[in-house]
Image (cartoon, rainbow, N blue to C red; front, side):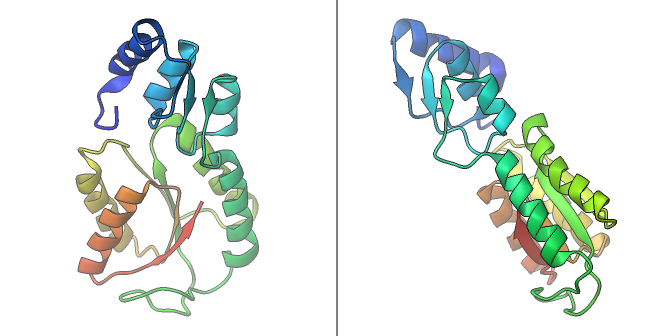
Amino acid sequence: EITNGGQANANADGLTVARSIKAFADVTGLTQPYAEALSNNGVINIGSPYMSLPWYQQHAPYAYSFFPNCTDLGDEGAAVIVKQMLGQKVTWAGTGVTDGQARRIAVLAPDNPVYQSCAGQVTQAMNRAGHPPVANLTYTLDLSQLSQEASAIEQQIVNDKITTVACGCDPITLIYLTGDLANSNYEPEFTNI
């Protein structure tokens, strides 16, 4: 599923775990499709990363994670951005982005509905504070495409002169993206959401 195998393959795997293996729990529910398939088949699953609070409620009592939910992270990220960053000048940028200039903030998150709902919390908070993001950047959470997606995002960040990225992204995309930005001699500020 992490390489875009899709929900159908995850459903088949979830059915095998529930009916053939007869597992009570699975600690390898590390993708949304697989965690949903396990939940739908009554198998406790642990590991779905950063799903939203409504997602966990919808998949209760089967889905759990060691990671925080992105609803809480979105609220916390929005609070930091609104209280400590909006209206302030760039402070922690690297090469190619001058400290002291007005911030141009972009929100970045995977394009699936769960993660977009959490990124939307940040966007809405920024809008309410009178400082909407310059861009809402998205990418497909597909391991086989992350490098290409990061390259396209890097180009947009550079072209739009984004000074600050509010990132609700996975670590692999972040590695590719920051590498591409460094190679372009353009290093904006990053904050987590």
